[in-house]
Length: 204
Image 1 (tube, rainbow, N blue to C red):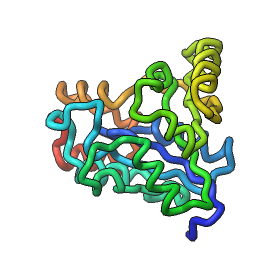
Image 2: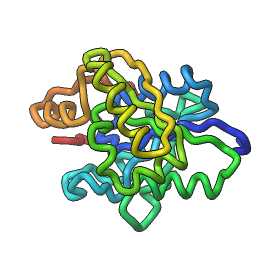
Image 3: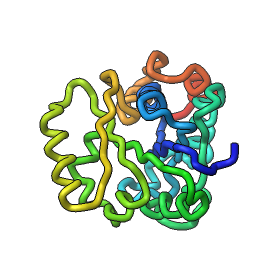
Image 4: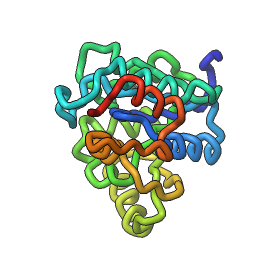
């Protein structure tokens, strides 16, 4: 695909491991905003997590690749892993806009991250480079989220839209914790990812 005048979703995270909740959010963004693609970007040097406690970049990238390989409009991007720098969102989006100036980027984030978005590194650049889509689970107070969106929009020149997603009662941290107990939540994982975890005896 040539990336002129395309609408591209950007979903970053540690993906340790990637699970069906991530795919649901990406699918919702793809459908609701008529995106051309969604790029999944495993963090390289995360500013918010202790790297020595994270699974290797090779394994996390491989799990994302396995999770998205059968969906033609989902793509793995190793751009943050390949960079020898802290994986700040504003840098990633700036790189994308420089490389693909005619495309529109949609940065997909969880509503739980919205509360501290103004503490991120250069949130004003994130708002300048991308439209922000906020994944809202049905157990969250939509009014509170709308208030936070208005607050951010008053501080920065931002386009922010809520993204409704079905509630997913699982997280990567819960999956890792239970795997240490010998419990594998296969129902929450893409089949190929579950097989990869079992074959490589991960998180044990």
